[in-house]
Amino acid sequence: MRVPYKSGLAVVALGAAAFAVVHFRSADQPASAPAPISPVPVVTALVQQGDEPIVLTGIGTVQALNTASIQSQVTGVLEEVDFTEGQTIKRGDILAKIDPRLYEAALAQAQGQLAKDTALHAQAESDLARYQKLGTENSIAPQQVADQQFLVAQDAAARPTRG
Image (cartoon, rainbow, N blue to C red):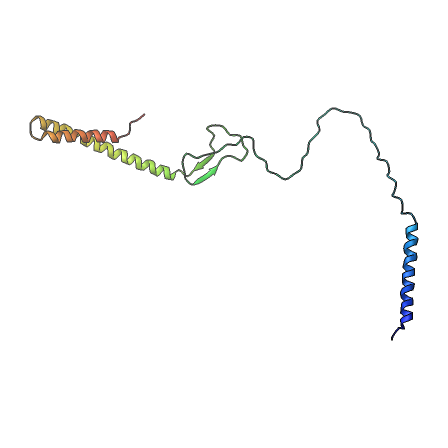
């Protein structure tokens, strides 16, 4: 259905008049006053002397004032740990136990080598005594006696000294 041109113009004019009345009427009224501010209550207390706990909250890390670095003198399979983190320790405290089998095997091998070197040294000294006797009789060359003396000195140097 088609609205005649004059009636459409009348509807628009009526709408504009209604808008103007509402708009200008609200502009004439004063804006609402802000709510009054209420006074802040004040509380009194007696002064007291004492410790006050200080509580701080935040994100961060804590680092110890004193730390100890533990370095092993030997390596091996760790069997047991005899301390807890944060525990106070002193020099000489046992902190951990390492599997001793590797070191027992190395000790047995070193003891075997010492026995071998001791036997070789004893044999070289025995040969030297025999060579020296033969050397005085001119039965062997002096070079052989000198070589045997050097061999005894080498074997003596290879043996560890006991302290």
